[in-house]
Length: 204
Image (tube, rainbow, N blue to C red; front, top):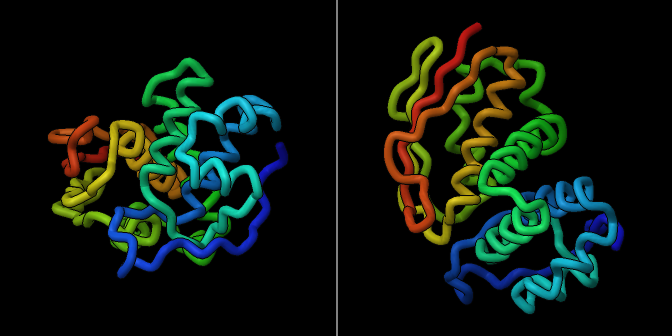
């Protein structure tokens, strides 16, 4: 099955469908990673395990990068990729890193010329809300070599999505040219949590 084409798909308006949603670009990045790791036929092997609506969207190539979709679709994609790869949540973290690198050269390409840790951190909450319509990210502390962030109200998140979020932070920081990046989760960020507190460390 080929990489999905960008075609229109009308997700339900928020006034009708109150489920937490993720932006289509996040689903597309997971699908790209799946096919890069396991080839173009990988989707045929995992699609039967998807929710019916997601399976239909994948089958007909109708996922749009700019539309909103139920967040459980993204959870299903990450779970399928981990299962097919015989890997744990660390794979979702690598997807997050890859997505950040690709998105900051496409979706957020205007940032590239001025990327610095301070620039990325100051805009992190805005970037997060561009991918999810649930929850809130807040920078609690920011100083050279260290930043603390808090996520709350992230309904529908599972362990894989939290790992993907951490990986996205790592990927964005990597693009700024810093080294020795380490992110420590202080609270939450597990399977049934809708919150997480984490501290990022790095050196120049």
